[in-house]
Each structure stands twice: as structure tokens, then as C-alpha cells.
Length: 334
Image (cartoon, rainbow, N blue to C red):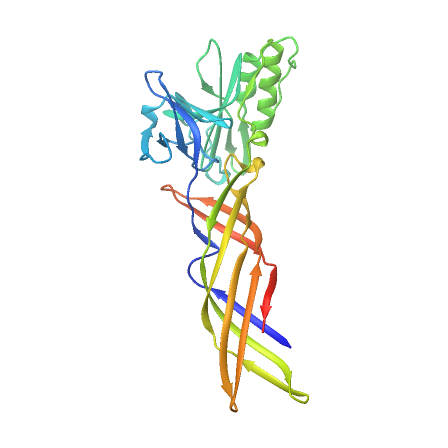
């Protein structure tokens, strides 16, 4: 017997939908230096936040704090942010919008900076859409930006203001440091340089929370659904006769559980997760033809395995896309 069952999922599950945010164990420090342990709503890990939303426990109501209310906050074991009023270069990183001026486009702003290396000399990063800036200071100096800017001194000729190399050369002076510092304006090379300097100064540097050491986390969700199913059957009946029957297209119910796993390497921003969604479905129908009644029943357990990719949007929303492969295991066929 040849049997084909096709299903179209209607309403209760989808490949893209708006997601729920996670609440992580964290803390914040107010303007009086008072530290509060709390749960912090995780936002897009790719960008520095401008505010935080917290609650004291799982059942309490969320509270929003602006940047002027918080001097520091962090996610336990992963990352932290400090408030600082700094001059930041607002020049575009897009070469199509670069200007002829070599000078930074300074703007004095209060921002949440993310410490990457902490010690005798500290390295920070600030990210927002289309802009990445690194900052630094020492125990005796204020926080300032490391200056790097693309510009066009002449038409179709790009040049780069790499004042950051002079700043680093002047500040990170130690016997075991290179005589000439030459590193790219990227996080990893700068982190390695600041680690080397702090170790040269006899200080064990503190790094930002290492996502490789972050715990694996998981969500479990009940996943009922409605399928629109069609059953086609081809079988031998009687003395070599072939029967072909197309049973009705009809809505059927499914029930399942979704296990969503966030790997530790991705736990900082939670953009990717692994999905496992075993579910049970059942189709039953009958029809009459030539005074004969035909009955069909098909049951199966499906085990979709796939990936989920989150896309963080403005206004505290996120969109996700599922990519799944499905293994079908019939449990009853009649």
C-alpha cells in the first residue's frame, strides 16, 4: 500500500514569530553606590544598552531605569557596563558617507561602556548600529576614545586617522612592551595588547565575562497546533485490483513539546539556539464509494531538529527564524 500524508501547519506554530526575552541574574548600582541584586531583561547583546529593565524576583513587576539612574550594571558571570560621560566620534564608519576632514566629529555624551580589560590600564567598547568605538583609561587618567577615522583627503582616495596608535604608544609604556605598537582597531588585538601591558605592570587583568564559560541554558514550551492534512492511498484490493482513494482535507490536532537550547558559546547575546520539538499527530477519516466504505487512520511521532536565529529589533521586540529537518516515525497505519 502506498500512502501519502501532507500537512500544512496553520496558526499555533510558525517559522517566524515575536519572541520572549529572558531574565538573567544580575545587579545594578545606583547613584548613591548602592548595589541591588535583581533579574535583568536581556536585550540585544550586539549593542550597548541605553537603559535597563529589571525586577527583584520572578513574580515582581518590571521597572525601567535610564542611564542617569544607574552608574553600573551587569549580568552575573558574563558582562557588565559602566556609565561614563565621554567625547565620542560620531563620524560615520560607512565609506560612502566619509568626509574630507581628518578630525573626529566629537559629541559629548553619557553612555554605558562595556569593560573588556580591567587593570592598571582599562579597555572599553561602545557599539550601536553602524558604529564601534573603543575607549581607555588608566588609574590616573580619565576615559577617552581611541581615535580611528576614515576620510577622503582627495576624491577617490581614502585615508585613515590612526591617532589611536599614538595614544597607545604614549600610555602603554613598559619594559616588555613593543617599541612600536601596531595593532588593528579591533577588539581581540586591543584586548591582547592591554592584557600584555597589565601583566608587564605586575597586574593580573580582569577580562569581560567569557561566553565559553557561560552555562548552557534551555527553555521548554508546550506546543499544541492545528494541521491541515490530506491523505492519499493506493492499495491492492480483491483479486489484483488497484484502489486509489483521496480522503478529505481536514484540520487535525497535534501536541508536542519544544526544547530550545542556548549553547554556552552563544550565551552572551543569544542569537542562535538549537531546537528539538517532538510531537504527536493523528489523522482519521472514511468515505464511501461503490457501496463500499473505506476507513483510514494514520498516527505518527515527528521529531523536528533545527536551529533558531533571533533578529533583535527596536522597541524591545525580536523576530526569529526557524530552520528544521523532520524525522517522521509512523506509530499506526490502517
